Length: 195
Image 1: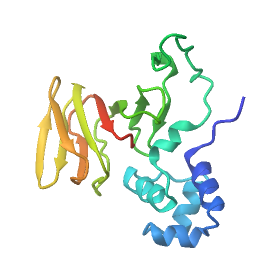
Image 2 (image 1 turned 30 degrees about the horizontal axis):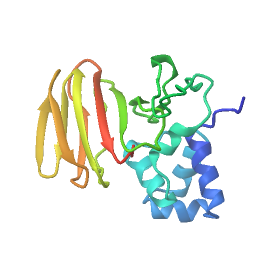
Image 3 (image 1 turned 90 degrees about the vertical axis):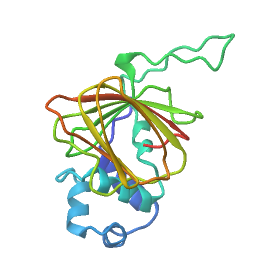
């Protein structure tokens, strides 16, 4: 069984494959080389925004961090008659926890090579996706199962609670925060897949 690499180790591996120095990558991400070094050695936790900037410069998606080996993500056998049917058991989801925030993303789709991505997201109280909004191609739709979420999309903001759903074009700058006192639990669908 292959050992699961930390996010810091994966960043270092991608940086070295691309023959980038710590200084080159750090400057491209507007962070200090010493902070990047600490991230790579798992001595510092980047914000979601910083992690996103690093993956953008490296040309990898944050979703690629889901593809690390994990003994819990054993493939469910596929049906002989329906090769497009996959079951993702709740205890075998691929998981990405954003360092420093505790925001947990669990992949509900079997992998990121489909036309759509569905993710179970848990945001602890007081956490947010960062000050810098995300912008990427595609569309997304989410439904809140628990908690109170404030989301900013373009120049507007919205407060969502249990049962509320929101759709938006992903090219609009967007970010969100848990403004309640309990975990926000939501299910988000994105097309094409991106974390």
